[in-house]
Length: 108
Length: 114
Image 1 (cartoon, rainbow over the protein chains, first blue to last red):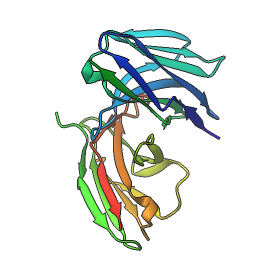
Image 2: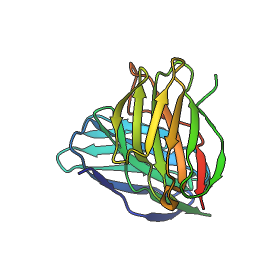
Image 3: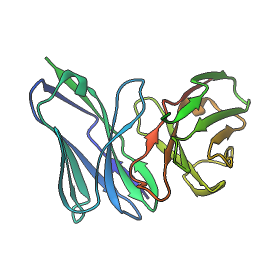
């Protein structure tokens, strides 16, 4: 089967750093994407890891370890606007399979 | 440059009815994927259309069907609606020659089945 597990909720304060984890089990795996979704909004693409290691895009970094079937999204210098749900998604032969999502709440 | 557009934004139906949802992909995109997102859950893959054919399908019953038109727009049809079909239905587009890992989503159609 295909499954991606994420912690349901994470809380942090403005200016802090937060890490959101994702463990996956898929029949075919090409890479791991991350999406952000604000309440009532559409998911928007954040990053993609095809290879092991860290990818950095501004305040966002994403990590992948294929041998551990594990990845994480790291957000630095948290802002109130980062409060949203974050989904990891495995690329499985041209379709994306989404995880359960982590709801991030940022407090002042 | 218009992004992915979906219609209608909200829809209320009763059990047993049929519904059609519509999607126009982002300009330059030729592949459309449909997802169902229940409240508090991640999007669940329904199916993907490319070159007017269903290319991949998730674990959804045959009550869920779709179509893609020559202009790349797409429809999702759901027959014999059940209460459990109440969800946000998301359309996402991508370019087959581009990156499948980067989907562009519409704002969705919120379907309520009473």
